[in-house]
Every structure is written in structure tokens, then in C-alpha cells.
Length: 113
Length: 114
Image (cartoon, rainbow over all chains, first blue to last red; front, side, top):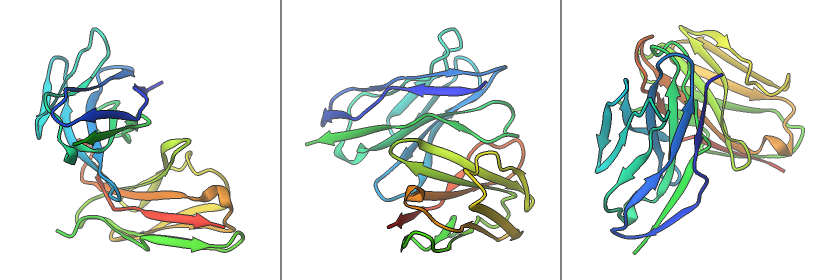
């Protein structure tokens, strides 16, 4: 079946540190991959996406590259800010958007000044 | 656009009571999803609709849960009777079209059952 595994949190970093949140997936066919972010007290919102192998999604300084050979979609940011504190969800869409997204369990990031 | 609207934002009720959560999707969106989020289980898909028709309700935990979408602009999730283990944040999300991926989430309803 389709599933997403992401590193367990919480992750605590100092401001300006480098961030990596690991995400690996299992899927049939060629899924599209996503990172969603949930800020405190809010719903999830799309952060970035990649729809085919070797694509790089990027937004707000965050990046993730679709690696088919390692079935991974790790989230990175070179210099985190306090405002990046949130829960990050990796997700996949098994096909062309006809079925619901499959979410990982989420990773809580806390950035301290 | 106002985004996905959920009400109430917070609900506290006693075990055994009926609870109704409400959602207004973004205008024009034809898919609607209900999720439940807890610390233990993470984000779970409960049910989703396409053009007001329930497509997959396999995530609904048990018969105490029911969901309806009487028209394109309104959906309800009802729990009757409620139990303490139903305490969670319930999210509604919507999207437009078969070939699109981005789901737009509402702010959630935090339900506490005592």
C-alpha cells in the first residue's frame, strides 16, 4: 500500500541552524510528493510539492528533492527562523490527484532564539 | 476568498451528548475531506466527498460517527453519542478538480469530551 514515514520529533534548533526533516515513502506507480506545514492553532497549508522524479520543490527558503532511487523527499532549510516553528507533514498523492493525500505523522519543529 | 470555514472552533461537551461539527468549503471546490488529528494517531482521513457524494468512509471509526453534505457549500460531521476518546482536532479540507493536488484546510474544531 501507500505510506509515508517521517522522522519523529520534536526537533529543536537554534535560530539560523540548518534543518533536515527526513521523509521516505512507499507507493505503487509514480506518486506526487508534498510538504505541508501547520502553524500553531491553524490548519495545514501546502509548503511545496514535486510531481516527478528529480523535481525540486521550493518555497520560503525550504527545499525538497524527489528522489525515486531512495524513495525519499527530505525537507531542508539552510537557516531556520523562530517563525518556522510548526509541525511539518510529508504527504503523497498516489496518482493524478484522484485519491486523497496520504500523510505522515508529522514532525514538530521548535526554533529558539 | 474566505477559505474553508469551520464551526465551532472549540467545543466542550459531556460524554453521551451529540456533537455536530460544520464546514463550508471554498466556493467552487468539488472535493471535501474530514480529518481527525490526535497526538497518538496523527492525522487520519475520516471520509471524503466528491460533488456532495460520499466516496470513501472507511476511515470513520464507528457507527457513532456520521457525515453529510447536503449541498456544495455545507457539510456536517456528527458524533452521537460522544465519548472521551473522540477528543481531538477535526479538520475539514477542500479541493477543486480531479487532477489537482492541493487541499485547502480549515482552522479546525478542537473537541473535548469530558
